[in-house]
Length: 549
Ligand code: GLC
Image: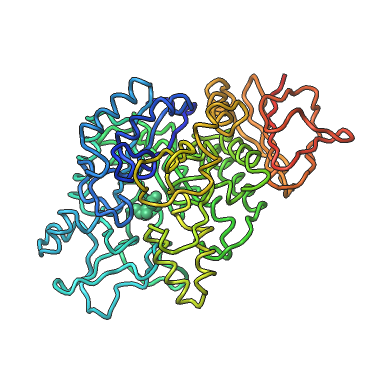
C-alpha cells in the first residue's frame, strides 16, 4: 500500500484546462503542455474528470465507452504519453470511474432497449404503465428519477440526467464488467481512481415511495455498498493505488468504513463528503441562497475530523471541485481581501488531517464568472433548475442571480493562464466564457510573485511534505465557541502546530490564551503576529500557522 498521507492531489477538468488544437475545448495534449507547471506547484497526483467517449450531456459523466478516449480530448496514444510524461515527473494520473450509471448511448443500454433481457438486467428496469412511476423519487438534476420506455412497457431508474441510466450492481455480471474496466486502465499505468457517487451504487431490495425526501435515504450508503466495494478492490487489487470515493449525502459511520486504513478487506483510501459545503443552503436547499453559517461549518469540520481520526478513516480535504462554486466567491472575498481570503481558506483546508485536493484555478484564487445571461450556461443541472425556478415563480433576474451563486458552471470556466487572448486557454473562442477578471487573475503573473496565492499554495504543499505533524499528526479543535475563528492544533510526539483562521472581513480576537512566546509563526498571510493587550488579534481573513519551539 502506498503512503498517500503526505501527498496532494490536483483535479483537472480537461475541457477547461488547456486547448492545444485550437477548437476551443481543452484536451489531453493541453494537459501535457502544463505538466511542468503542475510539477512546480508540487502536486503528486492529477485526477482527470472523465475523458471517455460520451454524448457530453453531463460533460463526460455520461460514459458511452469506459475503455477509450473521446476524440474531442485526443487519442489513446495521447493518454499513454500523458501517463508516461507525468510518471517521469513523479506524478501519477488518476481517472474518474463513473460506475453508478452509464450513458444511455452505451452499447449495454442500447441492447437493453433493443429488448435483450440479459442487458436489461444490467440496469434497473421496472414494469409499469406510462402513468405509474415505480416510486416518487426525484432526480438530482430535477424532475422524476424514472423514465418510461413505451416500446418495452418499462421504466428505468436515473438518479441523475435522463441519459444517465443507473447500473444494477446486484447483477454479478455488471460487477465483473466494471472490474475489467479497472484492470484495463491499471494495465496502462494509471496510479489511482476516483469513484463517482460510489455510495449510491447499492439500491434497496424493495423500492418504496419517499414521503420525507427525494428518495436518497433509501439508496445513499445502500445495503450492499461495502460488500461491493470490498469485492471490487479485492479483485482488481487497487488497494495498492490511491482511491477516493465521492460520497453523496453520506454518513460518518459509513465513511469510516469506506476509508478504514488498517483492516484486512480494505475499501478505499479516502472519501469526499459534502456536508461542509451545504452551510449556505437555506433549509438544505441548494437553490435557496443564504449567508454561510460559520458555526455550522466549524461543527461539521470538527465532527468529521475527530470522527474520522477516532475511527481510523481518512478524509479527502477540499473546498472546490467541478460541481462547486469558487470558494473565494463563496466563503471569502472577491474584493479588497481577495488575496488574504484565498490564502486563509487554502491554509485551513490544507493543514487538517486528510489529503488535500486542489481544483484547477483554485491555486491562483479564481472566482465565479458572474454570468448575466442564461445563454452563457452549459451545465444540464443549471439549465434544468433555471426552468424550475421560473416555474416556482421567480423572475428571470432572480433565477439568474441564484445561478450566478450556485451553478456548477462557476468552476468550469476556462483556466486563466495569462492576460492574453482567451486567457491563454485557447486560440479559438472557448466552449464557455472566461471570467472577465482573467486580466488580473492569471498564472503567468502569480508564478513570478513571492506573495501570490500560487506561491502560498506551493508553500502549503511543501509544508505537508516536510512536516510529519501535518501529514500524520492528530488533530484537536480550539476556539470552538468563537463564531469568527476556525482553529485547530496538530500534534505528534515532537511538535505542536496551531492554525488560526479569521473567517470574517473584520478584525477579531483569538480567545485562546496560549504561552505565545513558546511558538513561532511559520506561515501566514499578513506580516508578523498582531497583539493588543496580550491578546492575539486576527486581521481580516488572517491566517496564522504557529509551530512549537
Ligand atoms: C458526480 C460528479 C458530477 C456528475 C454526477 C453524476 O457528482 O462530480 O459532475 O454530474 O456525479 O455523474
